[in-house]
Length: 81
Image 1 (spheres, one colour):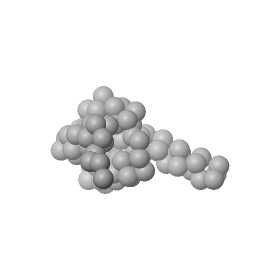
Image 2 (cartoon, helix red, strand yellow; image 1 turned 135 degrees about the vertical axis):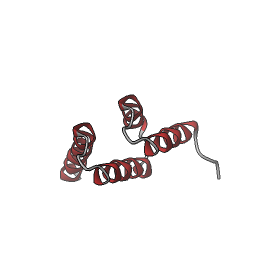
Image 3 (cartoon, rainbow, N blue to C red; image 1 turned 90 degrees about the vertical axis):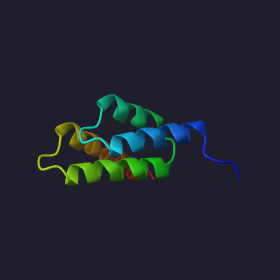
C-alpha cells in the first residue's frame, strides 16, 4: 500500500503548525481549507478548530466563523444526501 501523498503531507504539515500556534495564521487556515481532500483531514481540521475555541477565554470570531461555515457545509451536505 502506498504511503501518504504529497497533498496529505502538506495538509498534515499545516495542521501541525497551526495546532502549535495560539493565534493561527489566517493564511495557513485558508491553505488548509483549500487543500482538504479527505473526510479524515476535514475531521482533524474541525477537531483542531473546536479545541482551539474551547481553550480560549474569548474565542476568536475568525475561528468561530470558520467553524460555523464548516457546520453549514455539513448541514447542506446532509440535506442533499
